[in-house]
Image 1 (cartoon, rainbow, N blue to C red):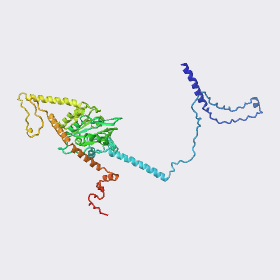
Image 2 (tube, helix red, strand yellow; image 1 turned 30 degrees about the vertical axis):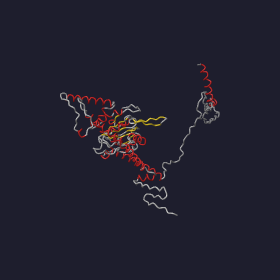
Image 3 (tube, rainbow, N blue to C red; image 1 turned 90 degrees about the vertical axis):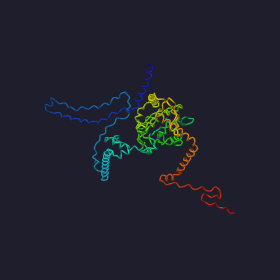
Length: 486
């Protein structure tokens, strides 16, 4: 301990000495010298009074010069010499404030008038955008009067933010075209995400990006498309999601529409799927996603499933089919109360329990109704005479299937017929697909001028016939010439 203290003392002494010798001692301010006036001595008087009591001469005391400040040995870091106070005096010059030229006065007046008009316009505009909602404006926003902001400040804020939300709203006011007439339009719309729901992507240093399909995704899309208008709604851009969807639905049989990143909305810095732009009745829309942030605007229409990370034994997607098909079969007027009842629960498990209870209740009612009746075989059906029913005959002593089971069996048979058609006509479907791809490639402009012509609505010129490959051969529309002898 003593060695540490003793080692630091010379170091501190050396630093203080260096600081002390590196600075100049402060110079005391010079004091003006005062002249001392000497009082003249009085002449001696000759009278008696002067002789008796002479008065001594006195003079003003000489002021002692001020001593300079005592320089202590304490070092300081102030290297600047003491500043001298400057006395500012008026020069007598006239200010230029009142000597402006006529051009400067006009310019100043014009700027003040412009600022006044700008403030007036801002005030009038603020009052105007706070006006009451108009029917045309509500129809454009797809809002109801009871859902629209009611206070003046809320209306002003809503209209003001709409002026700068071009890049945070979807690219179109209506994401989907109008629905088809009732016989052709499916009553319900099912929105499906892509990432970690239908597929999952993985990157490694050996293979790069690889995408895997979820187990049962082909069956899910093929079967559920009988009940719903299937729309894929993803946050990926079209140039990355389109190749994936082309693999999932090669012949465009199951997915009706595709919505990509430009159809989403940015809210508080997060990507959101705003269903108010969907152009569909939200009481008949079901959205399945894996990220709750994507559905913050309409959580009552959403079903959040756990993310699939590549497990080959996963059955979560297939387990959702009974719940979804029951909604389409029973046709509720509004799906949102049903989805709200299952919010935060394991939907396949909870719905499976409910369906088992309904089945047990159906069997109990059938047994109570047919307890005292003789049981006969039920293998005959009137529709079977005309080949209209493919259902196998029911065994004896068994309750008939429920309405849900009957519709489910019909959907299964319909799905099998569709798969059989695809397998039997795969070559023809591939030929048609290749033909469509070539037609699309032919429509791609080959130059900037062709692209501009397409934007202006000018039809492309037909391709010119190729030149003959051999001498004497004629192009289409020409008569072949006969070679002459020389």
